[in-house]
Figure 1 (cartoon, rainbow, N blue to C red):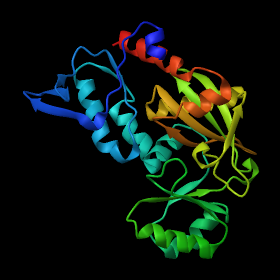
Figure 2: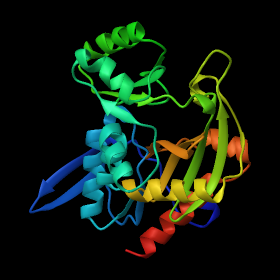
Figure 3: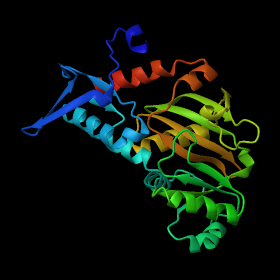
Figure 4: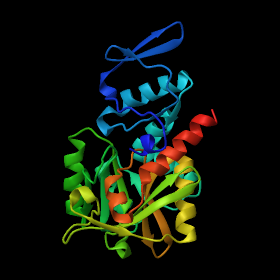
Length: 274
C-alpha cells in the first residue's frame, strides 16, 4: 500500500519459490516462470528458519546491482545473537552483560560474574520470545541448560535487568533516524513483553540518548531498516537485540504512524543512491 500510494510498483513474492541459476559468474533469478530482472530494490522479510537461504538470495540480488534491505551480511549478523552482541559491545553500544556457556561446571562462576540470579537464558536462534527463559536460581538454570543442550543449539546467558520490570522499548530505525517507538509491557506473570505473547504496547517518546543508542546499534549491525529493542536501566538505555525484519502491525497500531511508508522512503533513497 505504501509503495503504490507513492506511485511505485511493488509485488510481494514468496522467496521460498525463487529459483536461482548461476552461470558465468552471474546469477539469474526466476519466480515461477518469470525472470526477476528490471528490479530497483528489494525488502527481504526473511523468516528465521530460512535465514541462510534467504541471505544467499539477498546476496544474489546485490550481485545484480539491486538495492537490498537488509544486506545479506547484516541479516546473518543480526540473526546470530552472540556475534551481534560482540559487534555491538565493541562499537560502544551499551548492553546487559552476557556470556556463552559450554560447560555446566562453570555455571556458578559465570552467574557470579554476570551479577548473580535471576539470569536470562536464550537460544541464539530464538525469535518472538520463544527459547527465552528467566531462571531465578541455580537448579533452574542447570535444568534449562540441560534441556537446551539436547537441542544442539547455541545458548546465551544474559544479565537480568530487574528495574525494567519486564518492559522494553522497540524503536524502528530507518537510515539515520528513529521513525517510531513504542513501549511494550508484558502480561501479568510474564517477563517477556513480546506482543506475540500477550504484551501490550503504547506510544513512547525516546530520550536523546535512547535515540542515539538505537541508531548506533542499527548502523553497527549494518541495517538501514531495523527494530532495536531497548531496556531502561539504572545505567541508562541498554540494547537487548537488533532485529533485521521487525514486525509492523504492532508498532503502527501503538503509534498511529505509517512505519511502512518510512521504510519505503528509505528503500527509494537507497535505490537512487546506488
